[in-house]
Amino acid sequence: MKILAVNAGSSSMKFQLFEMPEEKVLVSSTFERIGLDKSFYSIKVNDEKTKKEAVLLNHEDAVRLFLKDLLDNKIINDLNEISCVGHRIVHGADKYNKSVLIDDEVISDIEKCIPLAPLHNPAGILGIRAIKEALPKAQNVAIFDTAFHQSMEDVAYLYPVPYEWYTNYGVRRYGFHGTSHQYISNRISSILGTDKFKAIICHLGNGASITAVENGKCVETSMGITPVAGIPMGTRCGDIDPSIVEYVMRTSGKTIDEVMTDLNKKSGLLGVSGVSSDSRDIEEAIASGNTRAFLAHNIYIRKITSFIASYYCILGGADVIAFTAGIGENSIDTRKDIMNALKPLGVVIDEEANKVRSVERLISDKDSKIKCYIIPTNEELMMAREAYELSK
Ligand code: ADP
Picture 1 (cartoon, rainbow, N blue to C red):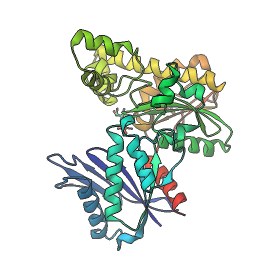
Picture 2: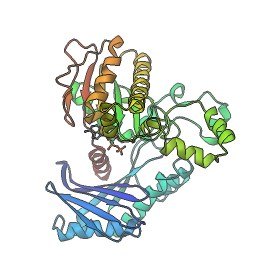
Picture 3: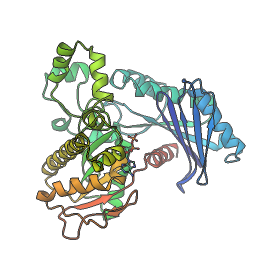
Picture 4: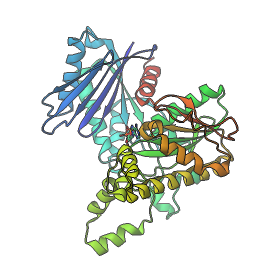
């Protein structure tokens, strides 16, 4: 059975076509600059990647072109072979604690969540509509970034603000990257050979979040009502004193939108270093003696360490700490600095084992009280699995 995983952004669309249940990737493709000039896409079949220019006025154009390429390359002979499509949806608020088959009610619920995810949820709906038009016979499944975190209890998801903000406006912690955290949690369970475990999962990409998991269920997560909260990220600030917003507005004359753009797009590693949001550039700048890049890295490490230490106490210990996503899988120095900062918890790094990128591996010493792993994430595969299960 062929299952398509679709991740629609406001100006991009990513596709991966799987043969299920074998979990074989038949093709992966990314469309960029949709609705802008100089749009292009890349398509990878059998490890061979080609990049092409194309006019992409909207998401429908991207879907049409992708499906045409599938037919032209004889990856499929008929569009009806794609029986189910899994769509990544960023915000499902507290209505969805698992993936669901998409019907009109689900679409309307995703629309209702737009105020909580004004950039992401409209893109998700555009993706669903474009696929429904091009593949009218396929089933569609929504896979929510927020779903995995719905197992959190009120002590974890409520903010210490007036309770009416929660009941009247839905102000609470939702958490994101749920598909990745779920995938890693499942991998940890397979590695340990049990579903009874306590783990702290560090998804360190451009966006980044840390989750405390007990027996496969999320107990705490660092992102909040939106993805700007938690640890510092490539360009997002993470947790800060909320009065900073008001103070900067009053002193600089910036509007609320300008300040929020600064906190979302000009903060984090980029904001402190003044160099880049990309951890590779930060590492290079540190090597050449840039002190602000070094400071940005140190703030990053300190905040991550304090989240892990706090989750260690909330969980009452931890069997596993897992590193995943771009930085977690690839940055040897970031993992090393975090693990060394966690010595008080009994973490001991295996320096040689840590010198790898993007492979699943134990990187803590045999004497370490917590096992630390690199576990590459695979959100698209998780989506395909969810879609496959529901389509059965
Ligand atoms: P997202 O999916 O949130 O856009 P990714 O998970 O792709 O982000 O992670 C992007 C981050 O991973 C960037 O900061 C990038 O610098 C970092 N990264 C990728 N490869 C390496 C590497 N070899 N060394 C250090 N950092 C890396």
